[in-house]
Length: 327
Image (cartoon, rainbow, N blue to C red):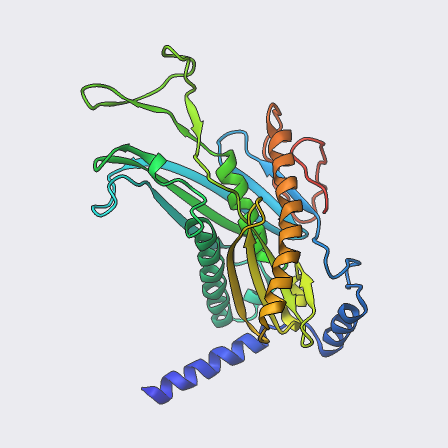
């Protein structure tokens, strides 16, 4: 059995190597361009790709984010459930990641590499996004409690990867954060008999709204830095760059420039001072990303433009509202 499992791991490693779609000449060219400070798409080493956000009008918590050609759609739903026995006064948060089989050309090579790619990417994206939001206590779970020990809100975040052209983590994190800010849950009041009732718009002595936002303590975002052999950082690596770089490090930072998490995704080792320098770069980039997210949210308020999905080969309609330009 041990020999069979070893051969199985070797086959998986071989499948991963076959998933590389960058030729040797392309690899050398990309590395040389990074060394010279000008990347193949015209960006500098510290530049993000264009960022666009579209918010749904039919339902709160629907956000479509495009980072270059990487596209992620996030939808949030909620329902009233019974809490867990050990945490009866806290609501529940669930994160689910779905990667479409057509999201990347790497999954089209063989059925086995398809399964390995989807499994690896799904676990990686889901865990990092969940850890950054949950372990940094960005969301107030106790505010989701309706009746302690009996009824709480369960918030389910579904991450749908439409197109993976590199840096899927930052795009997913941006979409989740924007969706959580945009989301509204039904406003519930508890009467003296213990019954829960949905609030109608403008009713009650205080003319309470029918939908209320989530209680969010702070807003973290991530910045992923690619690593070369000599330790040079490359911000927002594309799919081709991810295949030739020696590793990645993802740093989560909030608006107060507090580091909420660091995830080293294998590759070349880093010294402590390199991690600190990377955190400074991430803080600058996250500050710009947060500004774009808030601009998109502000532009979406009062706009009747529906959520427009991008499709390949179809000309995209451009509008001032709901669109965020490049950083």
